[in-house]
Image (cartoon, rainbow, N blue to C red; front, top):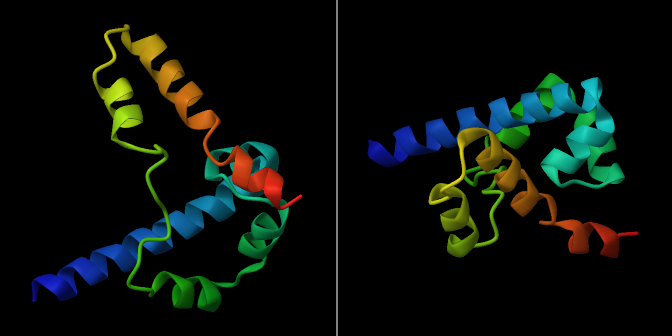
Length: 108
């Protein structure tokens, strides 16, 4: 029963993530690609998916989204950040901004 519940939750999260990704890409493609850490081809594909395709993709038993941190140390830097709230969000954004740039540049 628990595995079924977890699988249902994963699939629900996947669908929400895919719908959010499409909405972000339609609103501001460049910012969305940066935030989602995806390339042009992936962005084109995500935007082109219809409801049935999104649902089918969401039904996988693996999470489609992932942590934006490369490891525990990077996560710890954000969580244990002594800066005030305004700067800590900026610090987290800076830490995560560089993630994925190497893999994205390899595709070019």
